[in-house]
Length: 333
Ligand SMILES: [Mn+2]
Image (tube, rainbow, N blue to C red; front, side, top):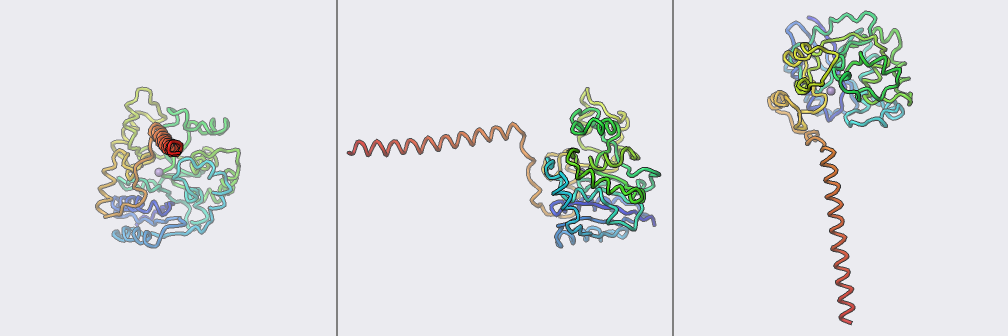
């Protein structure tokens, strides 16, 4: 039996997406692979922990443990210049836990980290065989940074030049815990978090990329198959560090489908139907994250004008009423 440690970090709201992710991971797992699954968290309820345990219990070749981080990351979150750059809403103190596997996993020299806004489309145990040598981490190269000038524009010139052709995306990583421990890389990451001159727009991804300084191994784009990649490929000006063949292979033969931008539960994502098949099969509840996606800037503007118009109308009615009252008082006299 090949034992593979894998950890996840998410908050209570993401328990339902995690249920879909966990089911798909184990449903696709090879028979000779045993997944030792861990969740680093600070607020997942007993009820949701049971929901996730029940899913893992459907399978013989896995076990799931919850590790309460007990406020270990709060200090980084509040004082580490993260909250101020928390522009996208789905980053929390738990996000930062992704950078700090070492403290919680002294028993391992290597571990896989995965997001839970994913569907595993195939067994991923091969990932664990990757030779990390002197590399801190293995990840998927961000396929968009060559095309979208904006993607890394928040970085200093020095960091931009260091990372412009090598920046790894979040979603799935293999961490070389031994090397991270030996080189005390966590101390370096804490320095980066606390350095207010370093803008962390992509939070944990920025911290990891800057700290690892290109001591990075790459895994194929198939491990982050973006549902919207096919749309981008149709755009004549789309360029990437990946070849056209590699990008289409990621679409046709995905290992992990990663809903990195639009989420199935907000009703806007492509390939959401695959996610909902598992959601329906597991009879999962529609929790408060199942809301329509945030409105576009145009819609927000329109709403603002409408509000202003309503306010103006009310003011007009009040003033007219007042005028009528005053006039009637005047004439009755
Ligand atoms: Mn994600």
